[in-house]
Image (cartoon, rainbow, N blue to C red; front, side, top):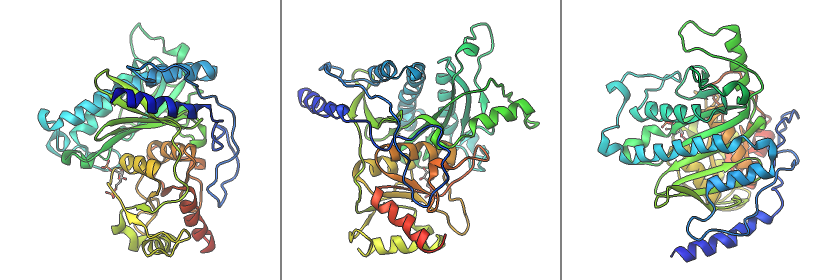
Length: 408
Ligand code: AFP
């Protein structure tokens, strides 16, 4: 069994030798937003080639990140940040798995704990937010955090003497600690989404109620960057296995937690999404409220009258990480489009839309609002929402074309 896995791994590792995918996005793209969802031309970032693979451990995420940093010296501080995220994912995976036994289920404080989105927080929302904050705080690489569960970016500079932070503060991380948490008590897959931006400015944000000072506004602005400025993004999926899927701008790599050694092991190198498919993934109850081009395209897909001629099936978990993971692997279109009531859809740009769009584009897919490339939208506020349609290139392009033909 083990041998078969290793053999498959060695074969697939050959994929590393392929040139960097043509979908690499320049971090400082300033091109105007186009009707097409296509990303701009690639810039170079090197991916490792593994000549020798240990039969017992395979290629671990730790080894992968060390090699990425050796090949790309500008990313030399990324491995320790990834190591913090990886540890948090392992801890969260255990928390989610054991929550029925430990009693960490239901709403926080017996109900009534509301986050800045106006959503009631689950016990696990708060616990996982704390785990991530603590795991990242001690990497010494992080400037500011913005999270779905925090009102404003949180300064993670440790107080006290052991501060090495000023020298090394380099990144801003945004994350959704437990996406899909409304499903968690029923054992449905959930996930953690993260995005990492460069951190140019020194800043401090204090936890207090009376709004932001000017310095804190600078800090806030620092967090608000378009997806084209992402250095890295990824997600952990807590499901039948725990997966860690990431990009640093040279393709998408998927790792599976091997609990026998406590390591994420490379199982899905250089993930490429199929160009077209037969699966759509939306909350169809909202279909009557969608923009006409969106509604008409999905109605055509249902009866096999779309561009591909395929009759589509519907698959929708209601957990973005699970739905996007399946879409990356099997192809398809996932979305939460604009509707009459929610003109910006439901998903958050900074810590859901942009990081997932980066992965989708790096896997060869597209991500659009219908009229704009999601990666190019500059956020006005931390918790801004964005309509999203992402997935297989040809199918998403069909949506973009429908919007454009309808004069949107
Ligand atoms: P929760 O984290 O509150 O469960 O929301 C999950 C989510 O943000 C995203 O993961 C899903 O794709 C989407 O919302 C589901 O929304 P609907 O329940 O409206 O379909």
